[in-house]
Amino acid sequence: MLENGRVNVRHVLVLPDRDAAEEVAQEALDRFGLPEEPRLVRDALAGEDDAEDAQWLVVVEDPRELFDTASLDALAAEYEGWLEAP
Image 1 (spheres, rainbow, N blue to C red):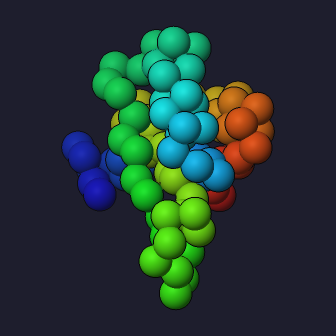
Image 2: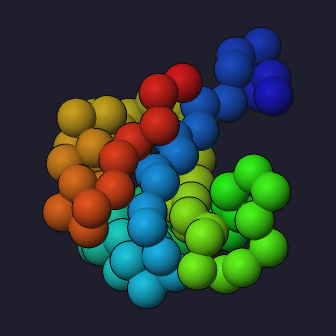
Image 3: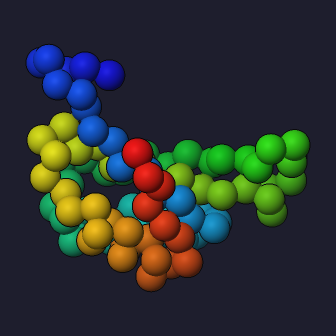
């Protein structure tokens, strides 16, 4: 998505379950002073309908490209997750 001629940067943190995703979203708000709450998205694994087989994504909007990806990855890792490569 373009915004004012620039790409709107979005960071996606992948977490193993909803509880971890909710905790990471809150922690990201507290640690990084986000202007808005990250969006949570359920990501069912291919061919699986069972909630047990879903990962959860925490989507952090970063239009000004202010957030350090290493810090976001470290936060996700604290909850057995990772930062998805762009």
